[in-house]
Image (cartoon, rainbow, N blue to C red; front, side, top):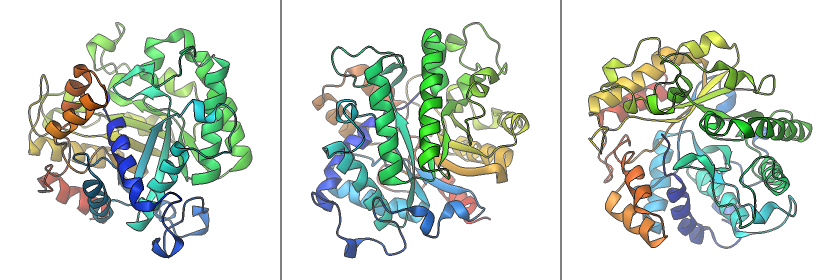
Length: 383
């Protein structure tokens, strides 16, 4: 199970108008935050505090410039950073690392908006479809959907290096929920592993302090989805998929949406996440996840279930978490989102998939807080 966050990124394109063609001027940037391209290692950082950093995807509840700008302000009240996760602009980066393009400027401007609202950023390079991680997203005509394709490899590497040079993230992911793709395409696994290793080594040569990772879908990694378990038993964790990336895995990072597995938050076992800590002595992180508070299709939940989910992550992973991303701050206005998706040519099945995540926010779409938001804020404040 994945999410349609790509749409929120498209919405963010509207917000770039507020920053002007070349980004916000220096005088409008928050003085304690890095300007786009500035080395965050030279500034005070939440990632140096020794405490868990708390963040969200920058996903506003509905399209609209005013909504986007307000959403960044709201995020600044409840988050230390945003997670920037964009699909690779394949053609923009085939010819090389350097250059100018709308995709480059949009990425820069997300960091400007984050900085203006007191937040830093984690970046994940995403070659796959956020609504179906068994397939690539946006490949140009004629490109082979394989990590063995020379054009795919070149654009992937160039984009990753550009992110390192331009955005200078402390934490950089080179794929999202990659085990889902590995299950579906075993013939392509070695191609991705070799590409990851090559890219990792080039990143480390330029920026040794950058912490590099891929994310793993925890519920799928534990074979909790029977249709996607390939005959394996629940709780029989596919550790081999994670350890295939060692020793080039600086942080073990997972995502988890257990409301697709358990009927209530109380059913999450007290040792559901803790095996992660027993398997590695490296830092761990949650790159996305959440629990719905209303029924949508075959899944659902309550505000109490959402609280129980946060408690499970906090109590089981605790001080080992270097960062924790909750997927969205606000619920999605599905009427507005569906209209925008159809206008963009997305099929009805994508609208239906996104609706499964519409009530995962810690606030209602209009900003009304849910009980879990108070708990999130308390955890963030170290209480």
